[in-house]
Amino acid sequence: MIEEYHFGSITINGKIYTEDVEVRCNGAASGIARGEPRPFGREVLEWLRKESHIIDIEAVKRAVEQNPEVIVIGTGESGIARVTEDARNFIKEKGIELIIDKTGEATKTFNVICEESLEEEGKQKKVIGLFHLTC
Image (cartoon, rainbow, N blue to C red; front, side):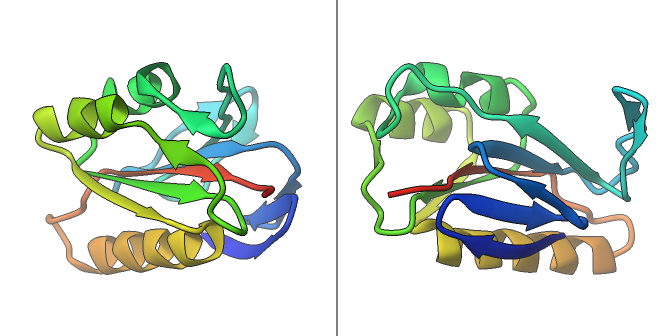
């Protein structure tokens, strides 16, 4: 669960991250990555892009390859980061629901979708959040 977001940092399951992140909520235990136990259905990865404020196909490709039902993109505190039309189309062509908002609101939306999904036994959604932490 994303516990807190402030300009430049995000707290997920008690750990503070200061770099942009990809958060996966897949409705099932994520297992163990890099020797760290992961809470139910959560995995946090670094999210790298060529240009900080441009979210293009390359920036969303890894998330799309996971075949989620929903991708939530946080465009920064002020919403400065821009999702290109090509990236939007790439996601939608794969049949993935796309939600774009400022990061503060996007983290709340991500939490709601994950929590609702986890409460519906047998109907868990695979959701990925891509969160830009500054601007």
